[in-house]
Image (cartoon, rainbow, N blue to C red; front, side):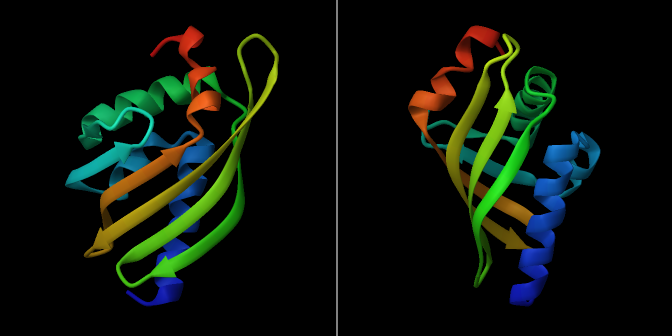
Length: 128
């Protein structure tokens, strides 16, 4: 893939998450992809991550990813963004985050996500 291919893929991937299109998101992952978050240090499977994504979409229906930086890498892309949404209690909420995505054969094989742990903790009262 070219650097532009990685950037185009990133745009489609984040757009699918923002739109709540879980089928399109799942199609972006290799079946054996691993997803890791700094906030808990746990490596997830695609199926585990899709359950979290379903909860996330229900909990934050007006989510918006404000991309601060997106760079192609030799094998994927890096994206820094601010996730903005309204919490179920009506409070406006925002969280800084960064993802480092590794790809092979046009799909994600690994996604490492770095979240502002203090802001992500504000989502705990809303379950999973």
